[in-house]
Length: 623
Image: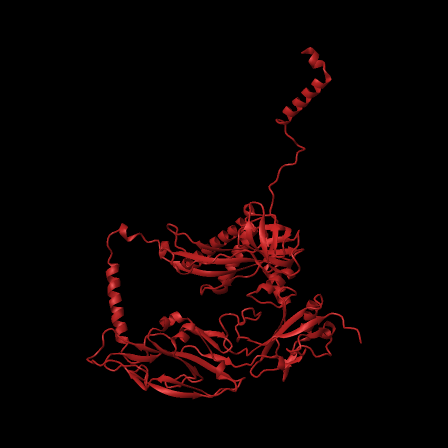
């Protein structure tokens, strides 16, 4: 043993073992502590939410916005330091207005140097119960739009419910605030828990498939849609076809510049849908189950009141005046288009016809259009374009009443000549109903024929016919679309293809560019420019154009803005079109067209024809 200890090699081994043992129990001040891998922080601009309920107006939308911002600021995942004032200033600078479409989200994110834009809406607010059992329930929807691609990359639909407290009765505003705050917390938590799948293209497989380096373990699944990025520029779109534990095969759905190895891919988020129960189900009132207590007198009182209501309705059906069916809830769907919910008609139950009136609305007024086919009622929309132009007179028959209600109707012929474009009229819709009581009043025993051939009668049977009242008037102006024949510059002849557009001409105020002959009845215009091949160039729109004579044109400021956008896109073919409207017309409930940047409570826009031009950056040499 003594000889072994004297051996230099053996002693060296012993020293190493001793140091190894001591290092496990002594602190290691020079060691670098381990850290969890952090996800990248997203800079997010939160745009003011939309309140889609009839409760609390804009204040509820702002409350929901602030609640989400507060919850996001508590995380290390999102940077929401961009203020509301900065967002509004940026929107004003680039002339965009909510609701934002995909293109305007990209523009706003670029202006704010944000990674993403967050939009949201308060979808429903419900109150139930009373006293200490009073509760509120609020549902909000949030979606995060990627600045580079304009695609949804995250989102959530969540419902928050305020809790009843013993000995405390809160007002409705406090309950709603609590419910919205809880919905905001749950929505942000849902977004935090979601990790957006990302991967890298490894190799191309044939002409239309690629292999990416992530699979099932990373959250990829068949059917998932992906964006392909190269240096923050969209290169194409993929769809997952096969998944394996650590890799996946995807089909190239769309390619703008060719998908290559090392391109980055990112999943497109599928927004969850809102369950009908969240939209319509009442909040539990907190009352005890009836099986737990004794019988109550309330059911008996309810039955008594119900019988009184039935008797009242039966009497009112046969007294003078209008019937009990309410007026049809009609709104503007677009230029010269009216829409309604077919459910409100009971899908045609007891309906004889729908009549469109113009300018006068007495019971004896003849309609200018009649819908007598049930398939037209179920469509929920009618177009009045055929009432204008140079066509032939419209002839039809309609059912008229001498009184409202009446026991009979008369089938009457009508002729309506077409009106010229540019004229403004007021329209309304009324419905002719037939009401048949289950027990005929009086002693009449006759049967109603109601065939509509000449006359129809319900005398003796208790059957009555009546028009619904007219609560809403719709102001509409018939405006012809701006066509290629109306364009002055740049000229476009469809048979000759796209015309050349010099960027230098666009910035030269002495050269007439983007001008057209005005259309009768229109007092506002705007112009859009889009790439003929989607994704090959940005989209653009002008400011609203007013104050013109026989011709209208874009402002010089808009021309310079358009030139700045086009200067990097030489040889691209672009589509431009002119939108027109009469601002005093009745506004639609939804944007018309759907992607208009100007949904501002005024009349709907009429879409002009497509015109083509080709961007020329440098003038061609002289021959």
